[in-house]
Length: 341
Image (cartoon, rainbow, N blue to C red; front, side, top):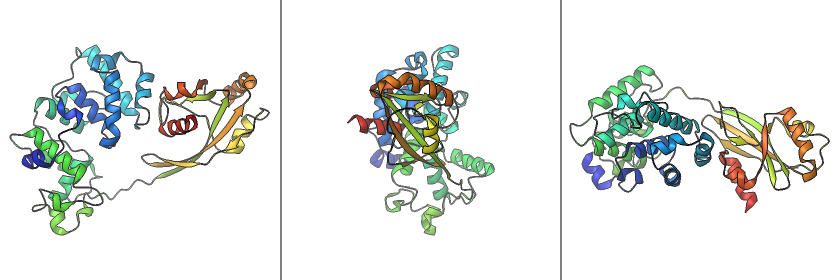
C-alpha cells in the first residue's frame, strides 16, 4: 500500500505539505462528505482569514459562517469554532496530540481524530471514513450490515489489526486515495487497484455488493415558497433558527404557498412574480423552492417591515452585497449572484 501511494497517490494537496495540526484538522473537517475540488478554494480562503487556531477562536461565528457559506453541513463550522475556543481557553492553545484526546473536542469523531494524529504525530491509529470503509469492506469481503453498531465495531477492529508497524502516514493516505480515486462507489477501477489480487469483492466479481447496507434512509420531500421581497437595492432576510437546516444562516422568509405569502403581505403595492422553482438536494431531503420576487417602492419599506415582523421571525434589510458577504445558503447565493450579474 505504501509503495502504491508513493507512486500513484495524491501528493500535491495543500494540507499534505504541512504537519500543522490546525491545518490538517481544518482539511479533515472540510472534507467530510465534500469533494476535494469543492474544498480547495474554501480551504485557501479560510486560512487567509484565520491562519491559526487563535485567530479562529477569536472570530465571531457569523463571520465564520459567511466564509463557510456554500460548503454545506454548517454544523461542521460551528463545531470547529467551539472546539477552537475550548483549545485556546482550556488547553493552552494547542490541540491534543493523541487521537483519544482529540475525540474529546466537539465535532471530532474517531476517524477524524485518528487522521490528525497519524499525519501530524505518526500515531498508529486506524481511520474508517466512508472511502476507507468501502475499500476495507470490499477487500475483506466484509458481509455484515454496516448499519449495525456491532458490525461497525468489528470492522473497526479489523482496520486496527491491519495497521502496519511502519509507514503509517503513507498507508493511511493510500487507503484514502484508493477510496477517492480507484475503489469508487458505482464504477470501481479494479484494474488499477493494488489490492485486486486479494480483494474478495473483486474475486467474486461483485464489488458493488459491498459494503452491505440494508437500512436505507428514505429521502424526504418538502416544498416551500421563498419570498424575495425587495425595496430599492435592499432585500429582506431572516435569520434561521440555531438548530436544523441552515442553522443560524440568513435566508429568505419561507411560506407554504404563494397564496400564503400574498395573504401575509396583502395590501402592499408591487407586482409579485413567481420565478422558476428548483430542487435543492440535502443529505436526506429534496427541497423544492419556489422564489416569489416582490419589488416594493422604497417608500413602503417600513410598512412592509411591520407586516413581516408580525408574521415571521425577526429579520433585517440588506443590500445584495451585504447578503453575499454574510452566511447565506448556497442556493440563495447562486440566485443573488445571478441577479447581480
